[in-house]
Image (tube, rainbow, N blue to C red; front, top):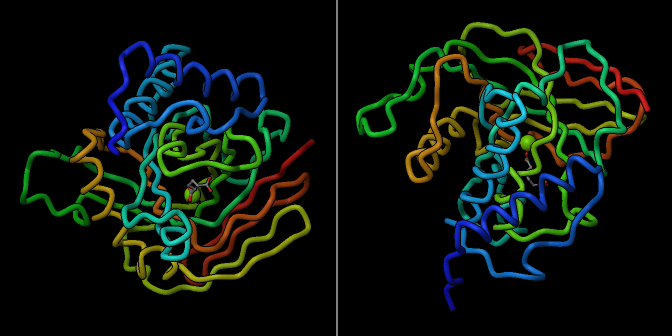
Length: 259
Ligand code: 0L1
Ligand code: MG
């Protein structure tokens, strides 16, 4: 049975619950334990949640994709990527330091980032998203589900702004083909190896998938926006110490995590 659509008040209540979980650094049970949320409403909750962050003075700086690996899609029983928003409060400088205390149970994953050089008209059927990108970079994303034990449904995670928590971008270089490059992530004494091909076979495909979702969900794409294309490996728990991602031929990105 289709979930019935939520009222404005219900949307705002769920957004406030997720926002408080983040602000208090306290997890919350899956929304699905209390209410059935349709995917359309999940994106409305996400918008309301990010709206609360913008009301506190944060600004939008980009978007991120999730579920870009076949394994993750299969695990969640979906065939669509998910999209979340990035704000300036999530940005960590390359080589910079950030504190673990602002997260509930953070994980880190290696990513490829793109930069948009122009606004994208979502209603223009002829737009060539690849020509709207001027740069590519290695990146790391910190995900921090606001749900207890990282246990969530597809709609839960969309509502929770796709677990977005922080990101670090390495040196930008001119837009180029990425395809299948080796990736190594080291963080908190653990390491994981993978390939950029884990991102929809080639991270450039994430740009097309992004445009498709943004058209359907009316998520703006603007000049200067960062696009986190998706994870090249499974995420690993984030612990204090050095974090570093190396992508062959694309460069490195680092951060220092303090407790
Ligand atoms: O790939 C991602 O950025 C994660 C999307 C959300 C799923 C998760 O929190 O594991
Ligand atoms: Mg990610």
